[in-house]
Amino acid sequence: MLNDNQFARVSDFDAMEAELKQTRHYLHAHPELSLEEAETARFVAEKLEGWGYTVTRNVGGHGVVALLKNGKGTKSIGIRADMDALPIEEATGLPYASKMPGKMHACGHDGHTTVLLGAAEYLARTRHFDGTVVLIFQPAEENGRPSGAQKMIAEGLFERFPMDAIFGLHNHPGAPEGTILYRAGPIMASSDTVNITIKGKGGHASRPHLTIDPVVVACNLVVALQTIVSRNVDPTQTAVVTVGTIHAGEAVNVIPEYANLALSVRSFEPKVRALLEQRIVKLAQAIADGYDATIDIHYDHGYPVVVNSEVETDFARTVAEELIGPDKVSLCPLIPGSEDFAYYLEHKPGSFLRLGNGVSSAILHSPNYDFADGSLTVGAAMWARLTERFLQEQ
Ligand code: NI
Image (cartoon, rainbow, N blue to C red; front, side):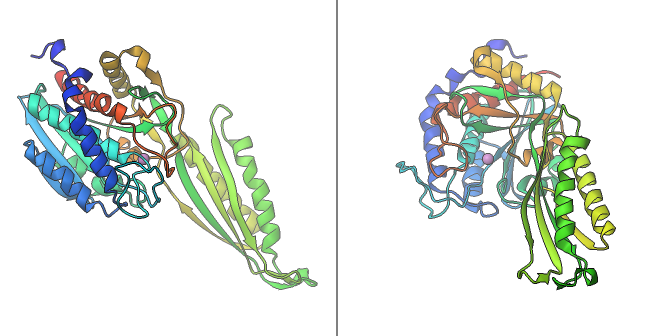
């Protein structure tokens, strides 16, 4: 049985800090885009094998899953890091800036991977845990449909590598380095795109009675869509329905055959998300029908809402407070961005945390962004302690 002073502390990682920075800078200099993470996966897999993990490669593309069992405990914990980079030309001028033209770790996945590797090395060396650790190095978070998470799940992630709960983190520009943010329930938005084509009947502008004008249908629809948030969504909830593009017609004396609309739809509750879809489809069909036009709706579901479970989030918050003190752990605001970690949480309880990236950090996906090395040891210690504490409770 472990006693409290055996659980990982941030100071246990001080001696590893130089190595963590070196790993992070190497990954930063060698970014690979979504679906192309072969070298990153190889780098990660070889390190894990060297530390004694049982490593499975090519799970859902270039995904790597590493298992380590210790003691007789029957519990298991999953922790995920994402590995892919973005098609951005880096402008940081850092000594370890990207060596790959037009590719950059502009979302800090180099840091997420490094932090999990740091915990992996520590856990393998110290073995102060009783049960099974499942480490998930995921490809294609940025640009996938199916995304890396979807593909890993489809290839049997949870059946082949059973886990009782799953945790992940993302760095958080604007929060001080070395801090941790948590939020139970919804934390990041769903993001859907809808393309609507209205087919009318084209003709001469002087003879509208012989046509079905799709411009009139489109204009009615745009106005009707704006009633969804104001009249259908619960006022205590938030949602966005934006008509971002509207295209129809080429000539002033012609009533066109088609009109096209593209919508961006966001929400923070699965229920609200479903309501938005139902109302958009119903209004579009009804309005087109009312004008004898026909309609084609392509509803493209992006990543779902990231919904953290209560128990696991509360547990992670407790561990974070033990590790760095309550003053460095805070409630995370709702984040309008989206994340494919949402798919894991549709299958398993768990929690997606945020790790402070500094108050003066450039924003994510900026060519000037860089992951904060000052958060490496806290991130690694958090995963190590979370593992030890999670598996302790039998
Ligand atoms: Ni990201």
